[in-house]
Image 1: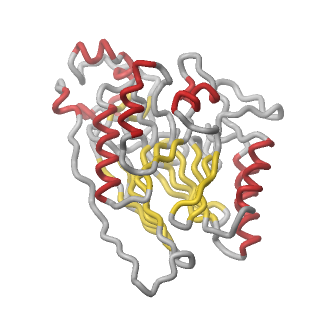
Image 2: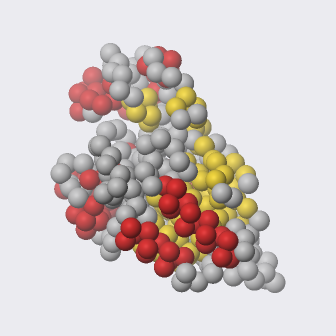
Length: 321
């Protein structure tokens, strides 16, 4: 069954969470942080990325989020994509940008991509709502880890910077990185080194100072605890990638001609993202569920229904920890 552009995406209002701070509360001691989080929009591969991005921004406003986050693989840095960047910059909320490997497609470099996006640096730190936010760049290469394909490491200089950033204050911490840091195949090659730094920070604080690590890249939906730290993998806004090409026909012919990779991805029929709330007692995710466009999922693509021990699903699950 062919899907028209109107049918291609069903934007639905996200669940809003009411939140008030009692007058007697001490924000620094019991902070709450709310984030609208999306990952792997891949504007260059799908025809409706602006609508998917708009859905996240609307949900973040409804959620009264402190900031809206994109975890990388946003779009290629080229003139044709400036309208999408303008849309993002006009979100009306603070934006947190993570650089993904595909953000350098088309011959760019991390430095050029950062400049195109108007960012000051590849990795950075800031304080928001009494949380220290640390944004990492996972697109470095290490001499001791010869990895083919896209670079996916945290270099020594950045590791030292991470240690210094964690030592600035004693605020609770949220880490952002495009590639997985929990040890997943295809993630950061020296993830164990990064986890050691984070776990050392917890030990020095005498408790769970690092409250959450947020990643994208893998287009999966899971939460794991490693070394006492929760690692949340946020599914793609848009699709799951496969190397198996279909015969097409899930979209109008002109759409498939303009976006040829649609024939080998399992597209979600509505945008996926996470509404994340952290408090001193734990965390909560309000997610979204979708369907595969045209009913074309792993079985139809003749690929395994799991990868790295996690199911391939068109969802960001609700979670609480």
